[in-house]
Length: 605
Image (cartoon, rainbow, N blue to C red; front, side, top):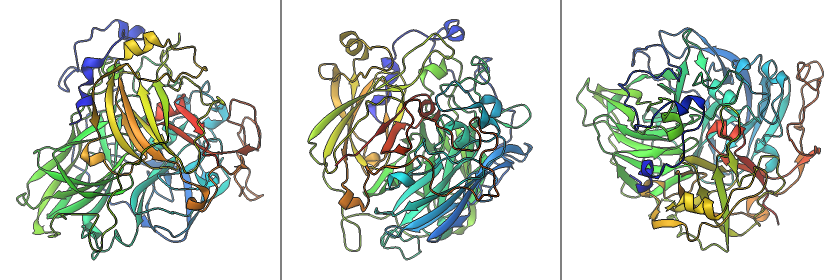
């Protein structure tokens, strides 16, 4: 375990909010404690009565992907719940399989009706309008894709009901487990929680997905995507976007822990497994929680890859941390189970401080695996995955940066409920003070998290390597560098305020990443190279139209309930222009991304 997760000793500051003031801090409540009246709770549900769904797979050089309002049954004993899904699915989307280096065209269409969480949308959040309740926009983002800026899924480029957009994905990258999800300004959490998410398995000559793949990894029925989430259901069995009655309905929340685990769209499902080796492609698609994942019998398994491909060699573990937006590639050997024997995938990481004071506890259970009376994949766990005959090259040494860039993660407080807002560099999204790294340069980003909570930071387009994490004396840092009002850039260097030796990245997170977990009260250092236009095959700083290039047919009205009529409404709080540039970087706790922990950046020549 990473030593930075002894952060309970780092928590500082008073308890915020009128409800929290009335509570005393006595540590993390156990799951067996009486349920807190300050959070919502799902009805009691019996686990393992539904089978784990196998997500359908689609492939081809041109795909049609449609977002639609649907209904979905999450558990045998729950009614159909209003939801969203992609391409005919009632919830989530099909897994896209594609070959790296082969261009893919996705023709995306918005056929959403009234939002399942219409009453929960907060129109005071920048870019959110009352018309979103009946005609919600959506944005298709290929998370982890090396994608031209006009196809990346920019949050200021919404697609409204009845409209189309064309996305061109050249995929100049290696095999990896990516995912696609909504990225609409101000309502990303509502849209993703409703169901707009799906996985992408990018293949190459080493990781082909076939049974004879050179990496000698399980394939076919023995390779299983797992979309992991946590939810709350209301008394009527509908998905609940709200987690606490302390925050009024229709107001933005800072995020909260669910109380039931959902895997591939089912609550606490069961999967019958052959007694042998499985490859699980797991994604944390939750809105809020970092999990410490393990099997209930504490058996050993192997991490073989993360966000952007395989590691040099399998890393044996009994547990590991997975933050929202992160993906992990696992090998699990069930050959030691007797027929009929079961084991559960579990979590025991306590929720962050500001959730725990309301009485939230860890969501402990995801799914169960039950051994069948048959032998499955008998492949051995590979000794190496890179750096040998027929294998990809080993991961290169960490590059030396030519520039060090300090960026901050903070939660300033206002007189409101909830009192905290979220900020990068103490700025709002509309700020013009954006990062502008140069193409072809290697930078070290010192991500300075002065909050008591973990924040997974995602940078679009690029990949990076995690260097280390160091405890920060946050009080001393802030006393020496008083934080100005939100809107004034604040990125003081952490030098002189670090405590103890840097803690290197864990072996299981040593590969190429696009999301990094920044623990509360730490400085997390990453090494990132910003590619050139020649390397990419496209200009990452090219201007592109705010309005998607392909619109709805004339016979289809575009966003008829839009507050600005049938056209595309502006969502940027600053001066409105017809062109956009660049990408975004943000916290992948989706409520935080929505308000306001997201900034633009450009990769300039």
